[in-house]
Length: 450
Ligand code: IFM
Image 1: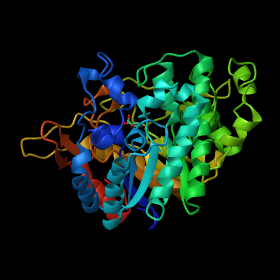
Image 2: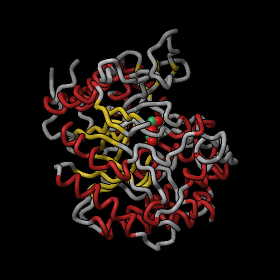
Image 3: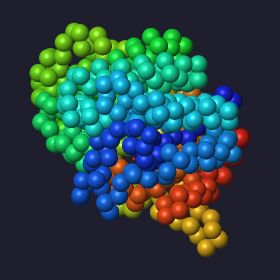
Image 4: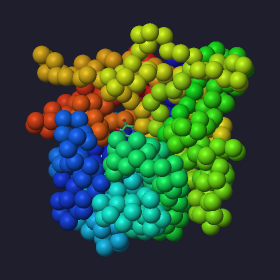
């Protein structure tokens, strides 16, 4: 079996609100997720992130586990409100000091910090002034990014500005199932999306100014497809379907984020309700948005099988009993081969898989261990496909498993477990799962074989 390249970066990922807990300790501000999770009926079982995995106090255990695992990089996110409680530049240095500890301990352990500056927990103060509906928020985020880059200069080399803006817009402002829980009109959804793209551009400029050596990206997610067969017709159909814009699902696509940012233009939307909105984007806004990143992050969990059809492409229906994760997401490893190749063709920049993984019904067995064979099988299949993408020339530099530990899965609360480390929530105890040991051998050997 062929191996991944020697310098392939193996990593693990997490995000602030999902693991830290204690968001307002030491002068931190409330975020929209503090508000949302404390609103009755919004999160399964009334769960919230008040304690989560208590990484605010137990961070050293997690870094020691990563050292044992052998990962070369840790992708974690910073809570904007911990550092900038009012989102107005009155910095809370005690909040920054928490991330100093994480960064310094990672470096000490030989783990490269990959810092994501925003993973959905907008400071409530910014939301009170209009949140992502207000252009001001984009500028406030740019200022925060500049502060962070100056503060961590020489220690953090890699930044991702925003995580999955697609989910912020669709789940938070279109469907209302994530914070801040709004169901806005298309016009307003588009504004939210536009301001996040501007926030990326402003942040990238501010980081570059504060630290010219920094390597900057954005973590994108969205619809991707893979061909039913390897015939040229099916491959072309899958590529076309990956970047086709369904009017009712434009947000959850890579191209509505990355075309403007990387290519400097919006996808074709002539004759749709989006066209007049795109036409209103000013040249000044476009100039801010078109800020080509150094790297791209792709969060990929599943995709659709597609074949050539009379309309160019056809979706292949999933057969009864199709394999699914605990969250009922389909298991489609081919997406890490074809989806990544299609993305890398369209956006020819070095890229990382910044998230991939699954939730399983994990529990502690009688022997005290967590035997998550489903996760091992899933990862082996997906990583073998990713290896094919690399062999076929896709410029993939690394893979971050989502997630290091089980954590607060947003509106599903603690019902879903994505970690390779089990969290026993009543005690906070960390138990490496069987998949942790398996991933350790993959990292050592470069070979994702079962
Ligand atoms: O847990 C989330 C993460 O915060 C963003 N990407 C998808 C993961 C699984 O749902």
